[in-house]
Image 1 (tube, rainbow, N blue to C red):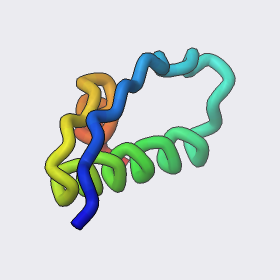
Image 2: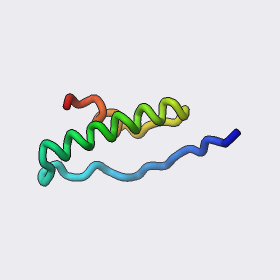
Image 3: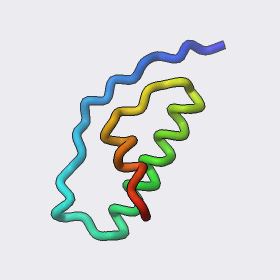
Image 4: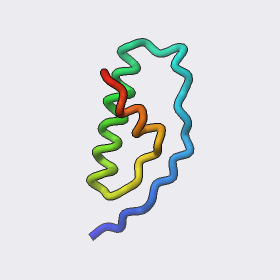
Length: 57
């Protein structure tokens, strides 16, 4: 059995000024996948990723 190590994420969301709508949808889908993966692994997801995952596509 493997040990789940806490993840430290200090990354900050990048500026939205240069993103296309397609790039934003990709970021939202990636955030949703991150939240789902963390939930299954029993890890905490950073707040900014949870907020991004809540956005509509």
